[in-house]
Length: 200
View (cartoon, rainbow, N blue to C red):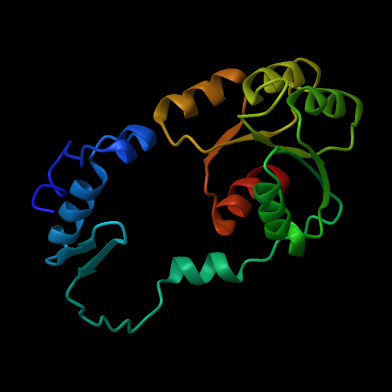
């Protein structure tokens, strides 16, 4: 318990060897709590478990006026009832989230989990107005799928989505032919604002 918050330190037993880890998690947690002028503690009992708790000072902040930018984005309504949105996303939770975001826009939604199928659908269905392309797709990744789609439909807007929020991923997306790039998790306001650039 005296060393557990130190960097690269772990208890040397079978659990460590089995589950791995770098020994940085608790050190980072301690640093964050201290930056917030708080304290982190641990209580532990052999063969029963450990309880970690932290305490930080709380100061109530009174907001007298809501930022105008937030009001604008929340009040804006999008009507895309004559638009067809194609979502290439293999993670069903992510797909249902996007579908929920788009529900009030009245847009028609088409979905696939496969990069290869995304190419087939986009090159045969001329009614698709915009593509939300996940990068990590089975059979064919989003970069390759975008390149092939753009060969047939260079004016079809494709917005890349990736869980990797690294600068090089944005560069890769644009290089593959994507028109825009969104890092997951995507907020509803951000998604609709970016899509509106191509649909409105």
